[in-house]
Image 1: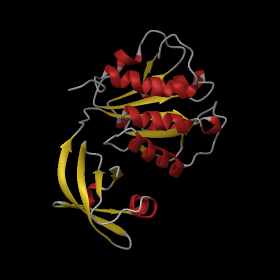
Image 2: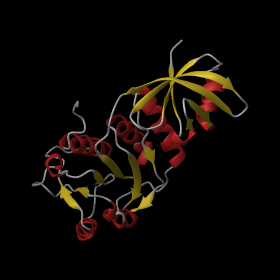
Image 3: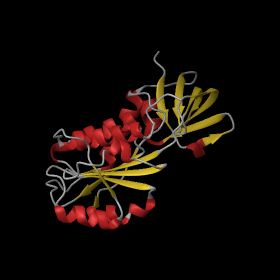
Image 4: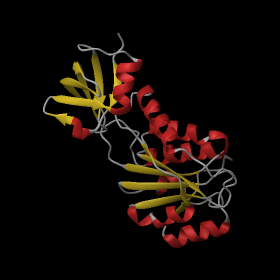
Length: 239
């Protein structure tokens, strides 16, 4: 039987046991039909794989014994992606690929050129969870509620550096500009940013960058921006 992967809360670990509850417990027992004795890999977003055996299954939780712990990955940089909301659920692809790259959180926002105002955080987090399992990630990315562009600018001070992808900038490549341990990237929706938004972002303290000379679709731009920044920071390299 294939050994499946499940995400849990680190607070659910006690000694050499871990408790799985909530949606992941439901998926384990109702969809995959797990029973006592089955093997599983439990992840708590700390870079480790906990190889476990199910001890018992109760009404609302499963108790597993941790057989061994494998060190798999270690993050040196935290990256938040502020992504302009997109039409036709195109942000789904952005979330999926952001998870694969190791982005810590995705925050959708509405700006002047956004045609789509609605976004489901629950749907976004389901996509993130599925993507993390499919690509074998040991970290689970968080998807936050949709915010306004003004809300994004108010959060600039939370980060060591905020990179603002602006198509009018041609002199500051994102891969060379990225510095620090707690980084954010702001990428616009279809149509990009207005000049007024770019001015307000610069006044808030962002670092304006270019993604290069290619013309990219909005969903591609978010993925490329994250990849270039993480690569520039050495976060995609082997230790």
